[in-house]
Length: 417
Image (cartoon, rainbow, N blue to C red; front, side, top):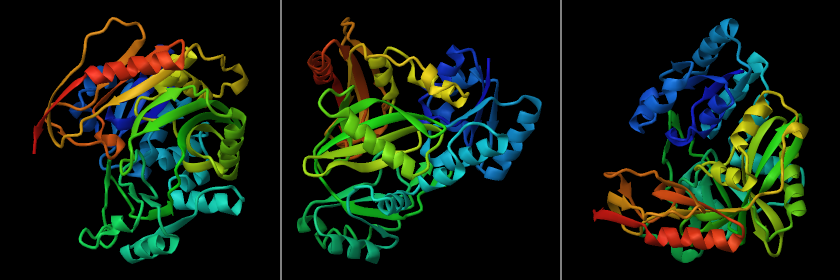
């Protein structure tokens, strides 16, 4: 049994890593900047009540975080540190180094929190990627867009979860009456737990193609890719994901894997887990969308677990505890796992979500994330999605049909604005 330090959980409600730790018999000390956030989501009593201790640092301050962690570590040593949210990866890396625990090195952690810096380093290493530029004010943004030409995509350098992404396909999207560029900044997006966006923007060439995600485990600079997660998108201007299939059987795994590993090597990624999004361009091949120093979010690890017939979360814990990758029992996928998201095209207030009854064993997970009273709208970004279904089938077609049929029967009732 190990003693684990867990720093926050994704979305305020994704306790799958926590559950995996308990299933393995480990003890968990949970650090958070705001325990009331989890209580608000209805998860505090159910999950955090099982923690060995809860340490709240509000407002979050790294030096206080380190002080409290060191005090505990001296009396009850931590065996591993776990963190799966983007905004706390740099602090987690610094503390792990201080406590001599296996984690991503602090230098790479800081680099990977800024998408422009990542692009710059990859360019210096000759890695193929879309044309890009940096904008820190509205004039720079307009200059970058006009210089690059259409189509272009704009996103926060420190963003995640498809937040505040804008796609400009043509001059028509720059209607002067809307001032889409002249009033873009400041936005100061609140990422939660006291983290505010720094308003550095990455402007890059928008390229059409198939989006895929690749989750990898890395130990001492050696990488293992779990497979290709093929993503289905809503049409532009949405940047939200409609669903996905794992594993994908449509693309050359070796070529994609080699590209992903070259990105990780260029960034000096030495230990931990990554979720890399790749655009497969028919003309240019694999191109980086972004690389994240954590496991895929939005409960999608459950999709990997279904197809692989094992817990990826337990693998992540074992990795941070120092278990060699060669001892992780990877196997041929036992089926195809598919997700489909539940959404609405109406803007308003959510009244009710009625899910259909089913006894089909292929329906594995159904979860509604929004609550009555929450604002809802067309899914322009991932945070607009209401819930999801995950299915498992012997064939891709079987799993996709089952998921699509299920979502088509879901009733979403919305009160208009």
